[in-house]
Length: 156
Image (cartoon, rainbow, N blue to C red):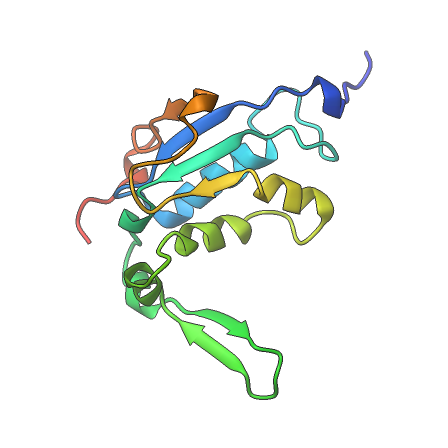
């Protein structure tokens, strides 16, 4: 029995749409990262990009469990001495780019910075509203919230 290794030219990449309305951010990010990497496929190969293109809609309506919405902190550094900045998910969701909450969660569940990781992450498209410009790719709609009752949270 030989070990199968996928070749980049042989890989077919599907398009999926995930509705993030009332979805729990961590569970959504874990699902999306798995699909981007291709770990859901039987022909998964660690050094080849075999993942799908993922379109996330309604990213501005995601939910956090517990008190993470106000207590969780995102840190970044400007590069200057004393230049640490912090923000919360509530501020980001109320701001100009609410889709960044989902992008940050997915990016942090991907492997650390490498050319393959960047290529896989570039197949993620996140939109705050319900509209997206990828209808020509005929994406398959995945009902993420129906997979497990813990995937959705209706109250906030």
